[in-house]
Amino acid sequence: MQKWIRIVLLIVGIAIITGGIIAYRIFTKPHRDVSAEKGLELSAQSLYNAFRTDEAAANAKYLDKAIALTGEVAEVTTNQEGNTVVNFKTNDPLFMINCTFKIKPGELAPGQTITFKGICTGYIPGFNVVINEGVLVGVGR
Amino acid sequence: MKIFISFLISILLLATEARAQKVFATRNGKISFMAPSDDDVKAVNNEVTSRIADNGQLNFSLLLKGFKFKYAEMQEDFNDKYVESSKFPRADFKGTIVNLKEVNFSKDGSYKVTVTGDLTMHGVTKNITVTGKLAIKAGKPLASCQFTIVMKDFGIEASAVTSKVTAEVSCQYQ
Image 1: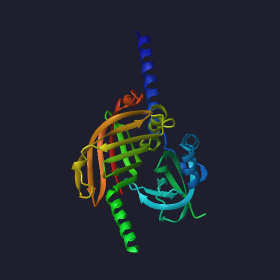
Image 2: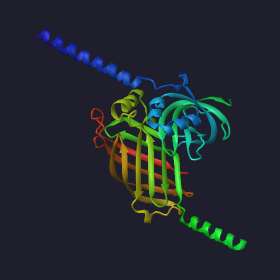
Image 3: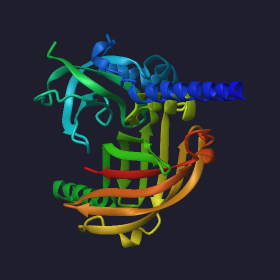
Image 4: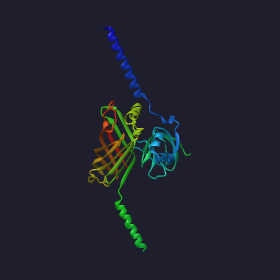
């Protein structure tokens, strides 16, 4: 009888510890920090060209990757959560590289050339390539 | 002759003006979702592109990798196990406002709208109809609505977490 109780207690104990470890992992795993990554160096135009010519190949190459993008700022806006967004120019007046900052970059203005590093989430034909969770790397070349 | 030509040109310009529809767009609309049964399962995407035209046509596109969760582990599972965002990076909706007659894009106000169209995600296209609100303020529309997405309708196997989510759209157009 006592042996039986001990086994049950042991199993319950193991279950609690395993559950605890899983929960701990889920709730404490840190979000990806792009500022610690090197990033693929690209121009806004070359990133657009890659997606326009072959979306599948560009997805394989750039999705989820840290990208250090250099280009000319077309416009500076804020998204509906108040984060700064920069749209980079391409040779198509309607197509931008849409980049959202996770840390406020300070004053930026259209016409400036800047380098932004963030994570590429993909391509929306006719609109933009999206990069988010980004930081400002530098202004000017 | 010169006068005649310029007269002709201005008539042509006027004609195009009259036919031209008004289109509003955004690159940074917002769509969030949450599991009705679990408060922790919620995520928001602030890079929704959308166009809405005063002829009633509208579309939305978003990238699934753009959904941000509070917990990194959940975000990873969402992308890798459930929506398979590397294989199906984008979700698209293309539809029309059914009750367009009740909406006046050039008059500020709040209009109830019914929208019907095709939602494509995870490689599956499904016709949906949702009701929402179109608020015109200073000539710029704000579209908002709430609707339910049943995971298995789109071939997404997420029963371990939730069978459906409530999606919430809030897009401010420029």
